[in-house]
Length: 393
Image (cartoon, rainbow, N blue to C red; front, side, top):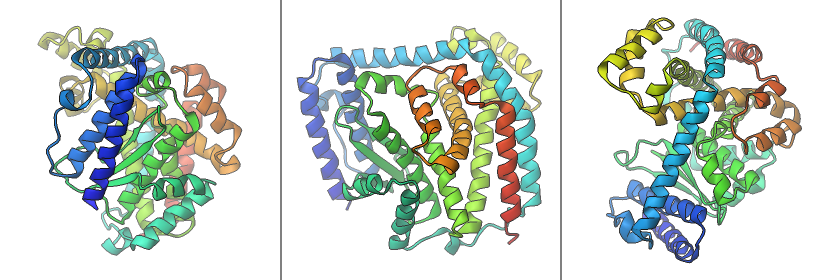
């Protein structure tokens, strides 16, 4: 199976290497270099086979590679610039949420005897059962054909070499050919793998809807909306499982674990909104300046270890990733409420897809009543629902 998957990925590399040789368009070159390198890295992750270095295999020259690195840096720097513009908005938004969600979640967890986790049998499926449940879930979203296409084309790959990658799962998308490849680490027929696969199917669905040009796709890679549909699919999946009494207890615990992870993203995002612009840009990182950042954070945050981690382990890409996941969770909470009423073909989803092509804009959140108070109302309803149906093992 591993050899078949590797052969298929190598064929994909060869096909896209030919496209890279022919194109003169800078954006096309950049996305193809990124996609091909992602395929090579995936083969390394899946197998113990040595793959040649990027420079020898991409059929391109050093000039194109330098353009690629430079362009990616431009996009990353633009994200930081946009972040500093809206930093005050992020501070107000996250501060209103962090005060309440932290207490609400921990109070809920105290009421639930979480130490008694579901038994191991509760977490696993037979192979046929695994794919049947996924199919039924996708049918519930009217996405049966989309899902069958992914399965029949064998575009889902397991990564079972645990030492090879830190990513739990990821999707490689080619905006030129519209190809999607999903990779799942430590794949097993269990709830964890199914959840990760559902998350990545959310990405693939988004790409299917958006039909990005290479230029649009490069912009998307740093978008605040990048994780929204994937987080939406997670929420819809957990509801589907619980409402249909499929591994119900395990899914309730999984739901709480997701809320805890999202709280971590919110916590770091709040902390990042307190940092000086110079520090965020990396213009200053001397010891005295770091202590100044610690002092600033300590006015709002009591956890000294958390403050030190925020300041001394600082990375600009961590800021981006935290905000992408945080807003992905927040916006998907609102969208789920609409999907429950209208399905994925409703107006709210269409509005989101349109907005996601643009830069981050507070007007989209305000226009759609995506306020902290509204989010907290939905958050409380979710916790209330979990407490009502939770089983004390």
